[in-house]
Amino acid sequence: MKNKTFINDNFLLQNRYAEELYHKYSADQPIIDYHNHLSPKDIAEDRSFDNITQVWLAGDHYKWRAMRTLGVDEKYITGNASDKEKFLAWARTVPYTLRNPLYHWTHLELKRYFGIDELLNEDSAERIYEAVNKQLQQPEFSSRGLLKKMNVETVCTTEDPIDTLEYHQKLAKSDFSIKMSTAFRPDKAVMIEAEGYNDYLNKLGEVAKMEIDSFEDLQKALRKRIEYFDANGFKLCDHGLNYVSFEKLTEEEIAGIFSKRREGEAISELEAEKFKTAILLYLCETYHEFGWVQQFHLGALRNNNKRMLAQLGPDTGWDSIADYSQAENLSKFLDTLDGKNKLTKTILYNLNPSDNEIFATMIGNFNDGSVKGKVQLGSGWWFLDQKDGMERQMNALSNMGLISCFIGMLTDSRSFLSFPRHEYFRRVLCNLFGEEMESGELPDDMELVGKTIADISYHNAKEYFEF
Image 1 (cartoon, rainbow, N blue to C red):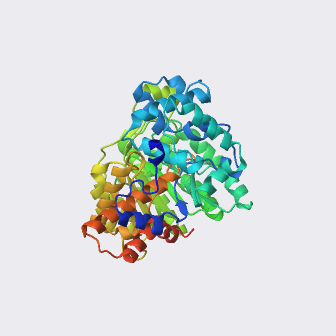
Image 2 (tube, one colour):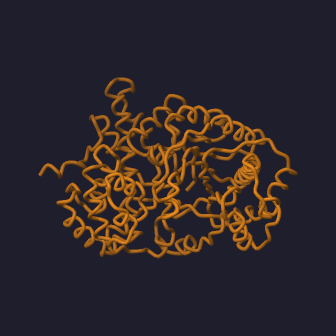
């Protein structure tokens, strides 16, 4: 049956070099997923799922966007339709996703987790729904079991500074073999212009057991939470920003801007940029003090559809790539930290493919020889975590840096079924190198090239994060 050969052993591998690189040096490497949005509660409590919709479609705005484009009613996406109706609506959509990475991911995930080779469409939907749901009732298909199936060694979730980390602590006391870390994400403390900012600071103050009435208080509260995360063994942070702010400022200005906002007064755009510059510099200097890795996800234009944002809230599929100017502020920001010798390990994720070379050259400005790959160009992110986006990121990094130092892939996902994206990345990586071995652009030295593949697949991340 022709459908059974779509996701085959050599999927995406176009020649014998690519095949050997993947199967011998990459396929069996453990997964270090150093940035995702999985629920630590689900992992700690080893959640089981009643059906495939709960584990596969809930929260997946990639799929939601595709369904909306096809004209599927919101009832079958985020609305009150039954789980089965939502799955059937997705199944009807899948044949229309040809050449979208969703088509590859869908069938890779069905095969790797559930052993299903059949293409998903309207005709096969009922059979696949029942077959997967039957498997999900088995203990090995719980949240933890799904991670084990993919040879995951470490997962790193993302938590706000006010999080108690109770589920991370609970898991750490268990006999679960997979390590769960987390990244400190203080965006709500940074975005001074955001609605609800003062309410958030009140919550932060409660958790930090102090009043936050001044900028100095805010610094102290955030430091307390950094100390708390660090004491639990977590040494990463993440910032989801449009761009890195950098404006000249004085301490007096920042104190005044913060007080003004705390008292409920409006602040100007320039004042907000000055504040964000100050708080980001403080945070990054503190990360350096504690020996953390800092991550910056840059270049998204979020919540474009205000009508749908009002109905469904953020992170529901109304975001796109932005065209912010990135280079100058980023350079000044990193240079300020470096000038104080307070630039810690840094990963820069770029969402606009036209900026790949900007970011690829920027990291070279601050790789000072102190640490292998100290400043990284992160893997293709969000809209770019597909074959073309990955190849463009890796080509920019190869041409303008050292891809041999690259720390590889991450899921950046809310789904327990997203881990085959590591396999997808590894196949794209091996094919990229394999094609150049075949053309003679790389030497016919499997040991040399294979070591680079193994390092990018696993060893570089293991060394970089010290997991």
